[in-house]
Length: 255
Ligand code: WAQ
Ligand code: MG
Ligand code: MG
Ligand code: MG
Image 1 (cartoon, rainbow, N blue to C red):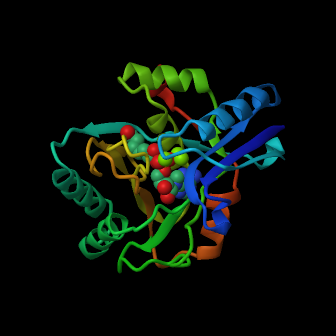
Image 2: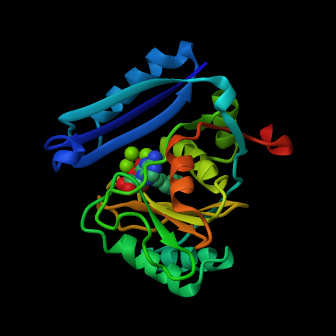
């Protein structure tokens, strides 16, 4: 048995009562790790750079082992850029190479850059037309019920490559689940944490980081999943929100 542990925190009341999203987290852990995971999430909600939470929802739910699927961890590449403009141009090129049309890539970047407030989840955008497909006034689709299967091995693998922050650690797992969903062409993300300027484009073959996708100090971030128009939206949404997925590092990379 595994446990889905999920946290979302807001300021100014609950998310659905107009509160500002402060922090969220999702893990899939064993019974033995429940207490430390829950405590770490509470601590994080109460000491976040986006502000002090006055609403915290912590959910723990048992997940039978037999419904858990496995997916492969994406390899990580880092591209150093010296400005947000250069970063976004490079991210756009990466999206286009993955099969997002130039129009849709440009529209997606404009949509993220033009958000007035951060959402709690990701927007689903047509990879051909750039049109947003989830409820356009909604807070987006929150991907959940995923984790790395061997946390110590994962942290070692990241540290070997010079990566040692929680943003990367969580984002690579999330992106690996998202890329395991049928019909997802690519993901674009930058953080809503004001001090964190890096972002990434994920494709089915790589997680590519860009050191600047957002101006320092901005607390508006978000995610876009670019999807094929042939895909069943309800099925995809169900997979992203509810399908438990454990990510593993493959073969040669696992050392
Ligand atoms: N599912 C869908 N969307 C999410 C989720 C989720 N589980 N968690 C966050 N988001 C959306 C939401 O709109 C947030 O406002 C936005 O993404 C940013 O979330 O390689 O830290 O947790 O150096 O602030 C990327 C770069 C860091 C890491 C991403 O995102 C690297 C990050 P944050
Ligand atoms: Mg968060
Ligand atoms: Mg996060
Ligand atoms: Mg954040």
